[in-house]
Image 1 (cartoon, one colour):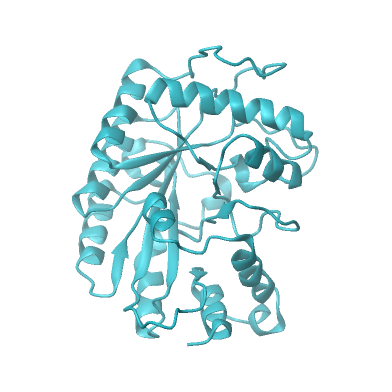
Image 2 (image 1 turned 135 degrees about the vertical axis):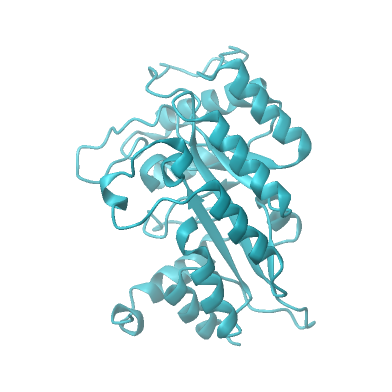
Length: 302
């Protein structure tokens, strides 16, 4: 299959198309990555724990996006060795450390305070701040969460899926390797970062996989994003922009993941595994997907 067909297919089912196959034929498998956002002192630890355990039971890792200082004040400058503690209870930090040791999760920074600082309808925490301020927020957040959990965090998930060119430079300057946002986010620049945009919600995962396998398009990656409010047991209400989707239970997630784990041409993966296996996460790959998404071919796709 040539790159053009892979890209077309990626837009129809919302997956991220892979780079061209190498000369040596290797059986392709559709890769699935699970991303759980908004872990903070304001969300259920029990629901997060249950979801991570469910993923682990089928050999899936979870990229868990943590808000280190929810609704907190921004520091004026970066202070090395400040030993700031994230606004997380000891129980929630212990849970992260437990799953890190078990290899069940990789931690991402989900903003600094998850505030909306935008002066437009597009919510954003970081867009509009200069590189210096964004670097201060990123360094402070990373240091605090790294120290508290023993992790070496390399992935950033921007609140509201929004960021700008200054964010990319600040991420490069502060030791991050991967940015995971949405397909419609800022992409008009070069960057050394790896890009892993979210592509579907948990309630559509089986539909996406079924469509991919039926068309024999397996050389791609699906990044499944969910929040506590997507899960019935959280007790949270769906936000207005998600009212057309339904909530799912932990049991239904477990059943779906069990079914998926038995599929021959599908495998669960993780950010670490993609990096170790040399997966192409370049901005060029993402921009190619994005250009095709806006083309005449896909504007009228149903």
